[in-house]
Amino acid sequence: MKPADFKSLPLNPELLAVAEELGFKELTPIQAESIPLLLTGKDLIGQSKTGSGKTAAFALPLLNKIKLSEKRLQALVLCPTRELATQVVTEMRKWGRRYEGLQILPLVGGQPGRAQSEALERGVQIAIGTPGRVLDLIERKRIDLEFVTTLVLDEADKMLDMGFEAELRAILKELPTQRQTALFSATFPDSIRDLSRKYQKNPAQITVSDDSSEELIEQWLYDTEADEKAHVLMRVLQQHPSESTIVFCNMKSTVQEIAERIAEQGVSCYGLHGDLEQRERDRVLTMFRNGSCRILVATDVAARGLDIEHLELVINFDLPTQAETYVHRIGRTGRAGRTGVAVTLASPRDSLKILELEKLAKTKFLKQPLGFKNQHGLGKSFRETRMQTLSISGGRKDKLRPGDILGALTGESGGLNSADVGKIEIHDNFSYVAISSAHASTALERLRTRGIKGRKFQIKFMK
Image 1 (cartoon, rainbow, N blue to C red):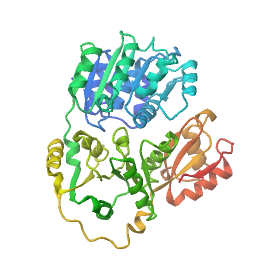
Image 2: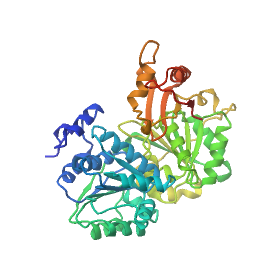
Image 3: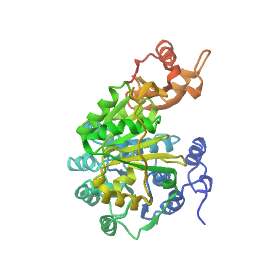
Image 4: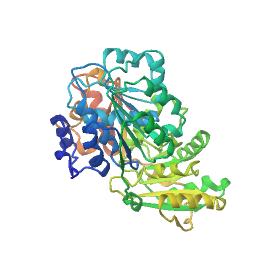
């Protein structure tokens, strides 16, 4: 009989306590299927859609077996993109926050390799990274894989799609043969089967088919020619107003052009693509997650691994080059039982590709003419955001914790209500906190004058 809730899992008390603190009760299907098997040490292939809760499905068993007394690398998680790796690090730290002395290290490009090497030398138990950076550290003999007992390939199909097969095979050859290997993937092509046959031992295969999310997503199609797409996009934004929107494009130049066009109307809109420096990418994603960026225009670097709690609208400005990518794009919305809207712009000449997407998404796209265009552009309502984000010049290395920032904002007389404080992110040398727009100026002044834990930091609005 499969476990129904977190309390029924044979997990360490610390992990069960965190689940209760976070309000997690019922297990998702992928969690109920995967966690018991992984806890027994079995190899596993888990196939489920984006947003199914698979990060916790591998994070909890992994954390359950970590030996905190041993300051050496025991688990390695590989992800296709920096964004997904960063998200997994955040989730892993959240679940492991009651583990005293737990060290989790991101190994991604865009950050100094020397600092990562030094952190590995000091001792970490879990590393989460991209194949390129991990292989680079292996080749430079900066990472010791001798004691790794758990390997997770997250979004394994995407890593192979992105051309990381050679890097993956090179990394796998360096790992101990006596280990547990888990592959999580949204699709299960032949390349995944080949990888599994060579590097896994009698893996259990779990396929979670959940069509309920598709029912929660309205999928619209608007016909448009290439030279009219930008104008049609503005009308789509007017016809489907939302607090949080992602517009997907195939090329970096298109991202830049569309983001600038929307921002010119005074709307909080930013672009996300592979040419941005890591710190800039982190800044943009933080503002979008926090609700202080209204529209994100992105290449498919954001199609996986981007977890936004209340994303209402996804727009395919360009049709994806691979049909499977469409599922990952629209999977950003309609999550956790919420409804969402996915809009696709296409030419009548794309009818065969549209049929392919409809077959893959198991639905028929809704079609109707766009309404009249608002001559005043996106309007005042689009220029307002629910939240604003404050940047703080102190972080984990300054011993700052989320509770310290929350306490500084809400404590004593005249403090904010906790409901006015959104996400708090603590990085090594800086932190971000989202504040409701109505109280953002008050929060800025309070932190500047009163400080945090009796210390003054540089506080400013992120833009």
